[in-house]
Amino acid sequence: MAGKNKKIIRYRKPLNLNIGMLIFAAIFVYMVFSVYTYITKEKVQFYEVADGSIVEDKSYSGIILRNETTQYADSAGIINYYVREGKRASVNTCIYSIDESGAMTSFLEKQSEAGGALTDRDLLDVRKLLDTYTLSYTDETFDAVYDTRYTLEAMVMEYVNFNTLENQGEMVDQLGINFKQVTTPLSGVVSYSIDTYETLDSSRITEEMFDRSQYTKAITKAGQRVEAGTPIYKVITDDNWSVVFPLSEEDAVDFGSKGTLKVSFPGHDLKTNGIFSLITGGDGKAYGKLDFDKYMVQFVSDRYVDFKIETNTTEGLKIPISSVTTKNFYLVPVDFITKGGDGLEDGFNKEIYTESGTSVVFVPTTIYYSNDEYYYIECDKDQTIQAGDYLVKQDSAERFQVGITASLQGVYNINKGYTVFKQIEVLAQSDEFYTIKKNMSYGLSVYDHIVLNASLIEDEGVLIYQ
Image 1: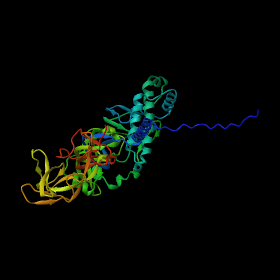
Image 2: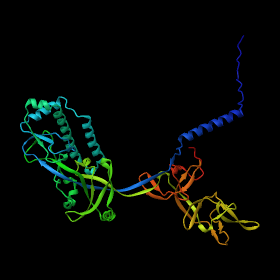
Image 3: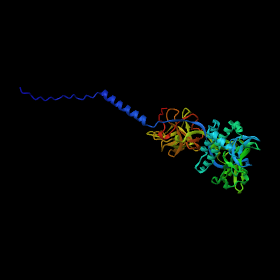
Image 4: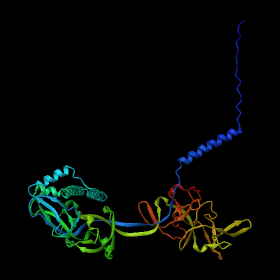
């Protein structure tokens, strides 16, 4: 029986769209879009207004003057130190020794190679030296790196030798090493940085002395051979010291009437007051002089110092620069203001026109700022007072047509959960912050919350979810 060709056609069921599925799909797409928008949209952050101040200062570079007495070697030989840089010594304290044969030097080298190490206190002093150099470094004073290097090398050598001599003194005696110990005839702070300015006084200061590229100082290292008459160290006999610096004509006028100035030393993380005076240098030019009676030890190895003088301090409220924006307002003469029927709301009498004629209605209005001449009111197409409207003075036929505008600087306050523009008056500015006037009638108060980045807000009334 012959097979029959059979053609089977599948029956396609009609597509039945369920309204519930459509609603679910729409809700799903909306949720995905909302989540994506929320994740990718830049978040509105807030800042809490606080009391603050901005300090204005000027930078200077000065020469340090102290009461210094230089001491010289009375014989030739290899030198080794007993007192560290910047330490205070009394009269007849052993400062260094002269080893004519070199036996002491060989002994110290062997002991240091055998484990002569720096103590924790020594390492702390080294770290302070490096921190000071790092904080005060500028490209213009790069040559100071060599002075710091020599000072650091001498410091480490002194500490190693000092620790060795302190711990191995009996062994030195047993070996019969012959060396000459030298004591100081003066009491004071010891420094091994020698330059030509130890006897310099303020009356001999000249402009050329502030050229650091011409400045040199000698530091005699422990273990180095010296000749008789070589300057070895100096003793700073008291804590009084001065800084002399060049003055412009403007500075001389600004500082001339002040007896005390607030001074900061960024390289030493130090702020203090200095007694100020105007002096005349050896070249006949005017210089400023700051006198101090403490902190001298922190600058014992320095001849030049960079510092800042505080010229002005502005107190007020501190806000970020990024929170500030500008907004336009209508100006209305101050004598047009009036009160509503309850006597509580401020507003203006607006002239309106109907089929029955002209009448006047009271319009409550938010005041954003005022001066002696005008009130600043909302300038928006959705407001009840628009450009071209006429306002009528209370108990008078005098009219004013709205249209004059002016802009104000301000921020968006979000205390109520939505943005409200608040006017500000900037008093001073730093790199990131403004100091603004406090206690303004329509301004900000301490602890108010404001939008950190005003560029994210288009206008008032935007809901903020904190």
